[in-house]
Length: 271
Image 1 (cartoon, rainbow, N blue to C red):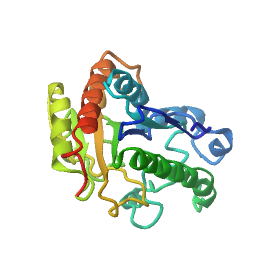
Image 2 (image 1 turned 180 degrees about the horizontal axis):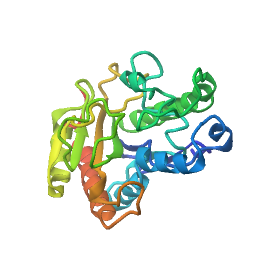
Image 3 (image 1 turned 30 degrees about the horizontal axis):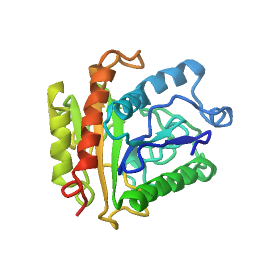
Image 4 (image 1 turned 90 degrees about the vertical axis):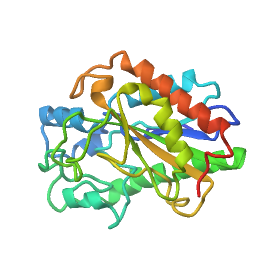
């Protein structure tokens, strides 16, 4: 399944693992660009800060290196179009800094869109189809294997940005975001082992939680999920620089995690 907005890249039929890459793209369609108040230079700088650059490459390396190829769901548009991982309603805490499903403020809390901007058209055009397709991708793994393991692939800057609500905490090389319902301890331990060579692994700092489609969220214990947040200095120049050799090593670690999640059906499962 491939659209202008996202791509579902097939893995092995017997893999329950879905690598989700929501924030790797810098693409802003012209009709969306018209609603952004930044000039071209300012927009390029904002994309440098907000984009989880090269995470699609890390996920691709992980898929290619895994013994059992995981599936991949990759956002082909920038999170400045919509952020598919936000709650689309008042549950979203990032609304406090203008970063709900549709951002109205930048990473530095400047105006991104005009005051009074109506997010509904962007939600309908981009957010809803993405959510539906991701839900179906998870349902496909459940139908094929009886379970689904969503591994959210992100990155974050070495130094906190002004938009971060919890930026005062530790910033380890690898942050694992967890959910009390969907993240079993065995999945966390598998990730700690897979990424243990990168200088430190912590949970839920500076970012917490993980993505599960709302149809399954806190409802379906067959869906496990973990967010892997990679500090950007491990693999690229900041902000917005080229990828370095760390991409290959991080991909190999992601492959190791995927293979454990694929094989350990008795322990890598939700509550």
